[in-house]
Image (tube, rainbow, N blue to C red):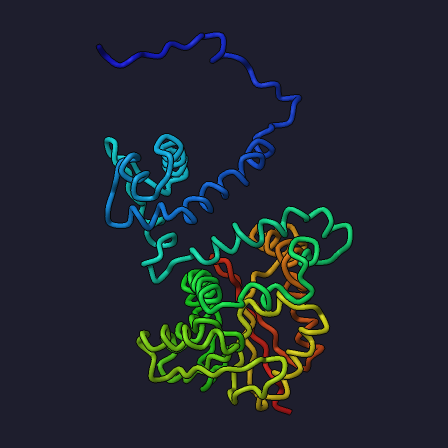
Amino acid sequence: MGLPTFTYAKGLLSVPQDLSVADPTIVLDLLQAFRRSQVMFAAVKLGVFDALDGRPQSASELAQTLGCDAEALRRMLDALMGLDLLRLSGQVYANTDVASTYLTQASPRRMTGYVNFSGNVTWRLWSHLDDAVREGSHRWKQSYGWDEPIFSNFFQTEEAANEFLMGMHGFGMMSSPAVVHALDLSRFAHLVDLGGATGHLAIAACERYPHLQATVFDLPVAVPLAEKIVGESSVADRVSVVAGDFFTDPLPAGDLYALGRILHDWSEEKSRRLLGRVFESLPPGGGILVAEKILLEDRSGPGWAHMQDLNMLVCAEGRERTLAEYDALLTEAGFSDVTGCRTSTPIDGILAIKPSG
């Protein structure tokens, strides 16, 4: 027997589009959007990509490996193939390059920690977006009963902290090289990356500028992983890691301070206090590098900044800003010569200088 053939009713193919009715494509796409996200979240949680990493398998083989229902798993695998995260050869499924790079535990560029954080933690916060908009505040208490910031509650174990930090490291590996290439940092001798996590920004800056020294400054829970990643880098001899809280502890000395994805987390009052501490610690002529996604001045985009802005509403205390808003915030703190530069990555760069006079 041959394969079945399809026939099409000519009338169905020639139905004219009613141009008086709005195109529903965007609505239909948004109805599917959360389903696509959940397919990826569930696949990471089940270990699909890890099991297939370097070992393509059939649906039945993979079901035995993962302890899943074979038919249900096959349906998920087909959906992942439709999302370009898996490919199928005969009856055997394999990871695409994207899945192997960003969705497996073995990859140094993995984003699995941030994927799990999104699926396990922020998903519930986002489910109360309507209440966040009504009340203008985060959803910690409503979703989890937390009174303290999300960071204080989620990172109570080193394992949880490391997985989240590695997820952010995946973002950093994409964005930090673009940021340090977009802005001229050649005048500076010592970068201090406040809240520097795994050190991806400090590493990228030192790779870009061979004369530069750097210090990664973050909470004690982040230090072991930062030391490991910095130690494995090509610039390990020029990057140190120091434990501390940038709101309360003395800041390490440097002539360039970096705040990568930091200001958007905090309230206006806390952001002003942190910028004030940086300004006081800098020598005249020193600089501050802010790495955030910048909203267009008319606030019409980019879409990544819009979604991050709402993410800050439900998850944190802060927000995303336009370059003019960053200029005002930095100028109020005493900085001048504010320069912004967009990149094609999830993060843009802003450089400002402490006046010499």
